[in-house]
Length: 214
Image (tube, rainbow, N blue to C red):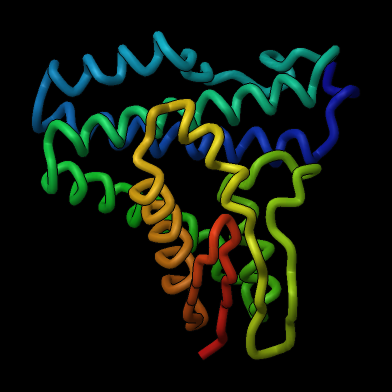
């Protein structure tokens, strides 16, 4: 079956699993503090948006007759389910939940940054490394595009509408979810082995982003 799969499919699948890992970590943090009440929110989300991927190789899970559609559906599931969970937690538990969720985003980003310490000698390589982790739709969506690059910085734009439809499906707080995503990116970029800074400015559905070598 693996002959039907290309490296890009595994690459995207691993990013979906990473997003799922983050969601499950957020649930665990809230369950440790709020017990069964927090788990009920997770159960609601699974019923509404789909079950978690089981720990099996991609070739044992994917529909080889519809590879693109299968992967797109997994992105929709994890983004909408996460949107529902973190928004519900924020509504119910307030700033305490915001702190727990932000800590989970930051922690995962820093852990991922540690894996990239030998791959980020230029801003462009940082951008490539970042996109090995964070979801931005399907590759054909071209959600992210480089505007300018040199040895000192890289500028790129990202279409936030790529996440918007899934966040809205999950009844998510859009501003909160976008801010969490930005927190993950900033934490990743600014905790690499070589020092970089991250800047972002949003105009409508487009964010203008810059990774700067310090």
